Length: 93
Image (cartoon, rainbow, N blue to C red; front, side):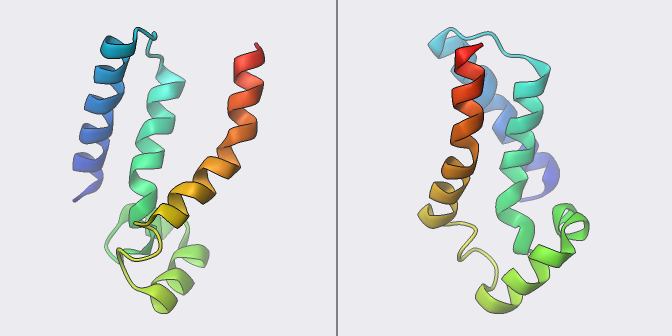
């Protein structure tokens, strides 16, 4: 998938979730969803995100290849651990 398809699919899920679960979508949330949707392709050579974070993406791709580590439950768990403090801060506001 390309950047556009990742962003479109994430947008549909975000807006669908807002309708289904009754939360108000906002610009910051949408931007975070779009960025998170392209992160799994950080190890894919033609991906635009790879060009921005080449210092992470090149070693990842050389070591694991595409659609291995970044497309796994391990990566999802690591992302959840990193973003959990942000969720705590936002929920207390």
